[in-house]
Every structure is written in structure tokens, then in C-alpha cells.
Image (spheres, rainbow, N blue to C red):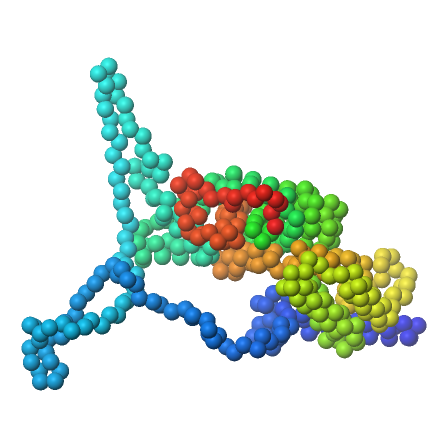
Length: 458
């Protein structure tokens, strides 16, 4: 009995030590939780051997002079620096050029539209049609509306500060309510775009998924993202599980590979091949190895990193996949490490209590790596699958950035409008489209939509 109690207490002490040692580099904790005592930088990338700065042979980047300046000012010397003679009639022997690039004075451009009303010989009076952007006796045009949406949804500037920026820059007294209405108006124009993106994602071969919390109307809501290298779609829902994912309308229609972080509800979808994010695994393995009792964790880190390097080398050489011998060697080494992990973490002794006995984080990680081996090594067997789920994390990070800068949303409608515009801007960025120009397009009733390729989206 004493031995059992000691073993249980030792496991609890190990777990508490591991919990205290957790930070953003060895767990899923955000960097903001590290406080001022941030861990030392650590990278698994190998050194390239290149020095910092511009490399030899690279043309470099600099502010170059233009051949067609907008304004040219001539500066003439008045007196000779040698004897002080007047140079008004002296010959010009050469010219030294310097160019200054600066912002021009800015102000709102007011365009008045006058619709003529003409009377026909029959007595009928007919009025000309106004342009689509002239919706009221006085209104803001598509360029300003696009700029407002850009500041709010791309630069994540709070609404009140956007109003301040417009007042200070353009002398435009736009109220905060009008700014909110502009964002919601822009989102309402994206129904066709969002439907197109949803259909494209359903046909994609490799899809990344992630979710994060968001404060909406003083309560916790969940933002779900589904993305590829060319497409991004966000969905807001009060729930986090499969009901919310089904409401998004993508994952249940997939037939390719779904890359995710291993959260259990994703496994509800049996219509896909699963691939797990190994960046998460490396962080958890780091935490396990730091306890000093899980030697297998360090071995697994080495195997995963070496395998990824092997895959990268094969891709660089134009190889479509690893051969059977290489894959067998990787799987054998993988199972050897897993066996060592089970030896270090034997099954917990029955406690007589209901439910499963409590296991340490290292033991749970080991069980996951053992149970889902094919999902962990999907990147090695299918070169179309990446090593991690960083694509989805980068896409969804901007939602957290917005919340950190501007706070939560006061209404569900405002949050949904923001996410619709974020879907549009993120997708446009992946296609190399200027985000401000893309916003101006749909305010001119011509929303940008990515061209449909002959095959499924990446």
C-alpha cells in the first residue's frame, strides 16, 4: 500500500513540475502567458552558413530615383564660392539630382452627380439614373468605404481610432456608427464569394482546420477556420464541437486529407484521412523530455525532425515519395521508441474507482502517438501533406490579434461581418491580390472571386 501511495505521489510531483515548467515553447500556451520571464530562443532549424544582411551577388533593395518625377524644382547658386561673383548669367555645366518622396496633401474629393430631368414632346418627364455609389443626397464613396474596412479588418484598428484617423488625415467627420455600418455593408456583399469558397474547400485535396475562442457580446464564442494554401473561410458559432463544424458546411463533405491538432471532435469525420500537427507534438515532447524521466521523448523529437528533413530533401530532388525501404526503416524506429515509452510509462494500477485511471501528460502523449501512428507520419507517406498545421494557425492568429488590439465584439452581427471580410482578405492575399484594391472592387459591386482551376483546390 505504501509503495502504491509513493508511486502515486511521485507521479503527481512529476506532473506538477512539468506544469510549472510549461511555457509557449513546450506547450500550447500563448506567448502572452510567459510574462517578462520569456524562455530563451530555441530553433530546430539548421544554420545555412550565410551571414546576416545582403548576400553576395544579390542586387539588394533601395529607394531608387524615378525618371518621371511629379514635380521638378530648379535650385541655382547665386554667388561663386571662390571669389563671390554673381552667377545669374553664368553657364550651367551640369546638374546634380536628388529626389524626395513624400506624401501629398490629402483631402476628400467631392463629386456632385446631377441627373437631368427632361420632358418629352408627349409631356412625360424622364430623370437620368444616378451611379450605383450615389445612394443618397450626400454619401461616402466606394474608395473611402473600402479604406474603412481595410483599417478595421486588416490593420485591426479600433473603431474610435479609425474615426480619429479619418478626421486627422482627411478632415472627414465619420461617426463610429457609420464605420460599423460600412463594415457590415461590405460583409453583406460577400455572399457569392463565401458560397464559392465553401464549394472550393469541399473539393480540396488537403484542408487545414483549427478553432479559437473569441469574446462576443460579453460571452465566449468560437471561431472555426478551414483553409488551404489558396483559400480561407471562417465561421462563428457558440459551440466548439462537431455541431459547429457541421454548421460551417465543409468538413463533412471532404474526401481528402484533414490536417488538425488532434482535438477529438475532428476524429468524428471518418470521410477523410487525418494528419496530425507535428509542431504540437514537438512542443509536448519538449515538455516531456524536460522532466528528465522520459528519454524516449528526445528520441522521438530526433526521429520526427530527421524524417521531415529527409522528406524536404526528397522534394528538393524532385522525388514524389520515399521508397518502401525508407518508410519501413522510419516505422521500425518509430515503434522502437514507442515501446521504450511504454516501458517508462507502464499502465496505471487499478484504483478501484470508476472511470479510467489518471495518466500523466507524457503517458497521454505516448498513447496518442501510438494509437495514431499513420496520422503522425502522414507527411512522410504523402508529400502533399505538410509536417504541421501552421497554415491554419497563421490564418486564425489574426482573429486573436484583433481581439488583443480592439477587444471583443459587442454583437454577433459585428463579429460575423469581421470574419466574412477576413475570409475575403486572407484569400486575396494568398493569390497575391492587393487587399485594398480587392475591397474597392466589391464596393463597386464587382467582388473579386478566385478563378476556378481545372482540378481541386490545393
